[in-house]
Image 1 (cartoon, rainbow, N blue to C red):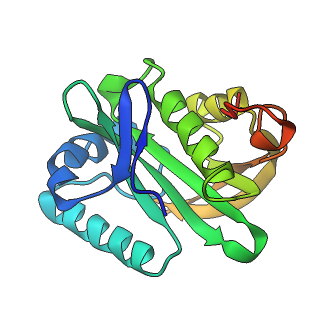
Image 2 (image 1 turned 120 degrees about the horizontal axis):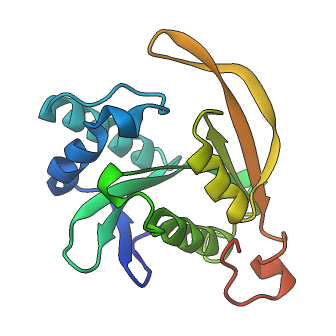
Length: 190
């Protein structure tokens, strides 16, 4: 399982209760949660309930919730979730969120590149998937820049805030161009 991944500007590590104040700032911003399948956090109780759900998923061995910690000041600026792990198929899904003050700085790209390398290398995964709200162009463009392929649209896949919405499904294989299976040592999801 993932304990720590370091990048030039970030450390990705498992979430802890002490991270909740920073995460409340991130997930308490309606602009950040606009395209996410959960409501904007309103209080520390929302944060605590979320952490309890993440701990339950981790205990079941089905997911690992990581936080993105800025190396410069140890501030938590976002999260990255590897979940719906299917060991028999060597696949998992990835989800992520980044605080608005940190948008446009390449931090999520850096985090996802490192997560892909780790997933396809140390974790031995064959496939990573991501679902993105069609309106979240910044997110699906990021995935495409990292070598994820748009594999289709799942119509009315989820219901959030009382309304069904479509999702764009993305996939990336370990053997895709730039991955470890083709002999590239840095395997960064391009």
